[in-house]
Length: 411
Image (cartoon, rainbow, N blue to C red; front, side, top):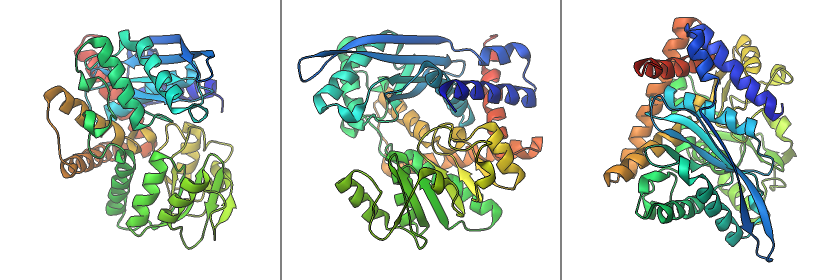
């Protein structure tokens, strides 16, 4: 699937959710639009004295429920269609989780791993200078996404505050703890996924023991580590270069050390190298796509053998893929529910920045757990009410919650 297909697929999800949820044509049309599309170009001074022109984006989808909220990613092939689709998914995710946010997405078209630390800092600061007029704690609150480390959010906050001429800790989330960040933010998406699985196990009265995790970055790596520490058997993990498999389970702590030393999980001693495609088709209890969009669709859905697909990446499965898996009794937990832990904790960070407060790690963990399980119940109940699966029910719930806010504003 190319970026155009990702965008058109997201529109199709909104259309289907509106039809199922009884949303009128006017509001469906509004949900298909992007409120603001900001595309910028700015100079980046390289260490060798040369200058590059960098393209960046900030798209804002819908703010009926509150300020726009969404991540910033750094990727060399980033496109407008990709950013637009992700901004829509962010609106739906916030609405499913009951948060007072709309949806936005931002990005920088660059290769982060080919930049020096100084170049990366100048890249991030330049981006904030370029989009400064359209962001802020009561307008649009950016957060980190792919290839944006916590350190970079500190640079971005500093640049924003330099422009504002005052301290504004609620302007961005995902910051270092010393700058007003939240405890538990780095592992929030992974723990949110764990809490969803606990709820599935409780309702189905069974344990899911074997996992395959596609992606070994912040989300996938933390997910694999948490599962390993809970005595679940993680038999496969992967990164952009490929994956590894061991039928009796991987020592995730050792895999982490191997990747830190070699730059990849591949060639881990005692494990078999496999492709990312192979990982998706393993006969495990739970498959966790935690890397990127467009991993499961009509082309390969018939080869998926997992009992549960927990979508921690954004858009890893399309609507046709979910239908095919559902017809075979495979439970699909969509991204707008499964990976919501990040924005739940970001909301706490934003609130603490506005109020000058801080919460303990245990308070953050309990709030995250309660929020994820409440959202799971809402989606599960709606699926039962409409006689459909959780994938479709989550999108129906998202559009209903947004449209309710739009109607309250007479939009």
